[in-house]
Length: 78
Image (cartoon, rainbow, N blue to C red; front, side, top):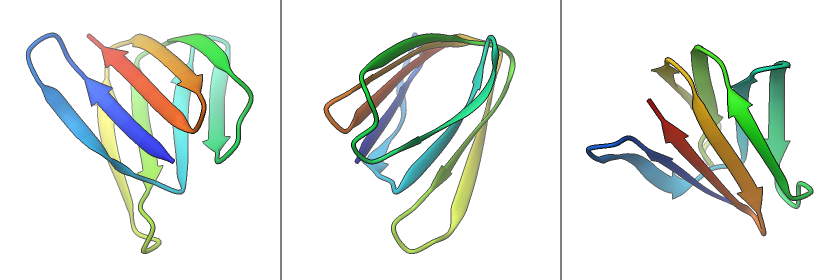
């Protein structure tokens, strides 16, 4: 699946991942391939994403919006 993390000034990350853990406003949640379509607000916290080789990376956010649709996770952060 594709993950796009976008700020107001730049594309922070765009690439293929196997999982994404997001800090949703109602609690953390994980997105895997073929996840149902979803739009969620994000709270301050860390986005953790797993690359296809199994390594994980993180990105701290102050909040934002996540849109999950058709194996694309688009995250607009602020």
